[in-house]
Image 1: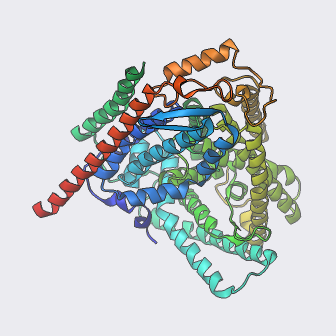
Image 2 (image 1 turned 90 degrees about the horizontal axis):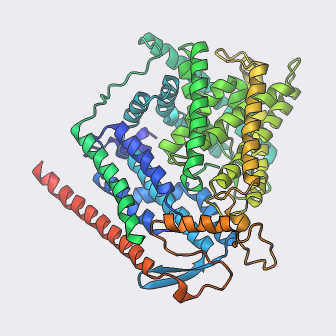
Image 3 (image 1 turned 90 degrees about the vertical axis):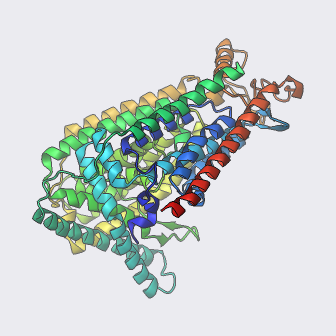
Length: 258
Length: 343
């Protein structure tokens, strides 16, 4: 397993990929905040807001099937809570949607709104992450004032996640090859904890080796990145477009209804 | 228990983000003064270890089909000390958000507090409380068990508090709270079992690691612990008291009628001028109301009373958005078709 398995689309090249990571990060943060603060009585506004992340994903050439599979994968917690809304709020209401009239309850409306907003903000987050290399994102975060220690920590973590997950896979495979039936809770637990324990010790040893290798190459605790961050004209254009989109939709929709 | 953006309101998200960022910044500065460059790699790799350890699952006997795995916050706090443990677990949470999209960007503050700050500090404090005096393995096991159950529980209790303060969910606070406490008691118990057995294993193989000899550990003074706990208690108390008062947003359900129980006495009736004002404000503020006017009494809402004109605007909005998306997709598709022939 390799990095590319998880964020392979970040290593493509497109108009969106070439944008500065700081601009993208701030745009997604503001977008998320605006979408969350939208009134929870309406499902159609989040749908309108979905245009933005959708455009980013399409321009960044991220396959939509991959995106939706990812959203589905992380949704259980939200899904459970959203689906419990209809159980508690049974105030009846009538929803008019163009030619259709739907009679339901406030709870269902809330449930759909929560899920709609969830999908839209997830689209934005996936749009950011799968069009930005993680190293660029880290360099951008450091420029934005995230503590250096945390940036280094995140960098190491990202680099070695897949090494250790690979190792865990090996251990799991060894267990599967030797354990042919259920062993009962006590021995299952003992086996699992021995696996975790040996993984832990090997992690400490690996860290020692890496540290020696890095000292040999002159590591002095500073995080250096070859990615150059520069705000170009394209970035300004993107920022302008994002502001225009977010604010424009807000201002445009408001007077129509009052 | 990864919070999602949608379960939070912007003030709560911003507040928790500020608290988490402040605490992390402070901890990072403290740790940077003490820790040597050699330990940077160790911290990073232990973060990756948490991910790998979460893959090691095992069957739980009572519930066939489910499998347990560890979270690791308390184990790291015990072995690395609370400061380093918090930094490591917070970085794990950030990576889970950015790479695996587990938990939202704005909910990051909540997630760092619930899964990093609170379990690490509380778990370490409880472990140390049990471990006063001479080291014995039995004491360390009891301490680890207690720390796991209570620390995870404390983090889990914060989830419904944050959700209730935001007021997005319709689920009653008490139901949500009881569910979270129940589920996380089980989670904490299993976490405790694994942590204890892992500690036992490590003690056999590498005793130096367990009896706090791992270099680079930052100790916590008793005063600092007490101050942290006091601040935490004040914040939690403030949150709970806000919930108890009639916070207009967070306690919306307290004044809503309950159609399933006709004789349910609503705490604040809808005739209350304050509630009417809030409703009025909401309907004015609402950008694109899919439904207009709260149904004030069960069954009193007639179809012709509903403002149907609003429905057409939102219909137009949704259809327009769909057309725009299709147009974007087509344009990108055509451009992409053209590109390889040029190159």
